[in-house]
Image (cartoon, rainbow, N blue to C red):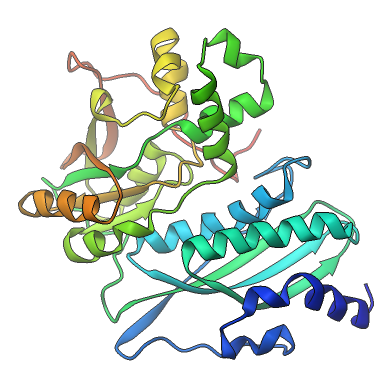
Length: 333
């Protein structure tokens, strides 16, 4: 793509996504100018999505754009940060058809309008290989108020937002649509699962409750058990979880009833992009109330304990034997 062609490409499809942000300079400069509000600090996150790893080649361009931004904003949401702006490095395997790019830009517009942020710069390239969308997002919090991943204390309540397993179920259905009939999934549950995989929804409404009451927080991208273990290891503690307390996405309960081992696999897999938090017991009621006021459901699923490791117990109090507990980019067979 020549310099002038790239300029036309940006002007045609991306420049309008920077409207209303003076420091973006209409995407005509090499850099953007950005500053937090007085008394605030930036929280910054980069998380690329790549064809063949995070999405399929035939996924709709609107969905690719939404997901690329959503997975980054999800991390900001878990830190109690307000999304402000983002950079995007878009690496294309070939110059895209205008209609594809129009749909991709429309998906970005939908996502940034939903999350409250704008595009302020980045880069576009063409080169052989898979499509890659690398986004860096900027959020802001009152200085010193970012909710950390580490710091869980024995006795803390463990909370999760929303529902678990829907995205993993959606991925299974994306790989093999025939499983919906085998699992006797209702059409509504099947469609919801596919939507949760294609278009995760960051829990921005938790900002106030996390900033005020949570001791630790992170989003669930690689699986509930894997991410919770990461959180606990930072302060040499462990976690006991109750299977019956886990909020299950539509359809996951039916799969769990048919095959508990597969059900556990679904609720411990990645791509949920829900928020995982620990909260002091004395703050639990206020945390729940403030979350509801922000339009987000939260559920207490266990508590922090002294013994290292993360354990899952069934309704009889028996510990469930677990296999792999989440996704690992560096352990893919």
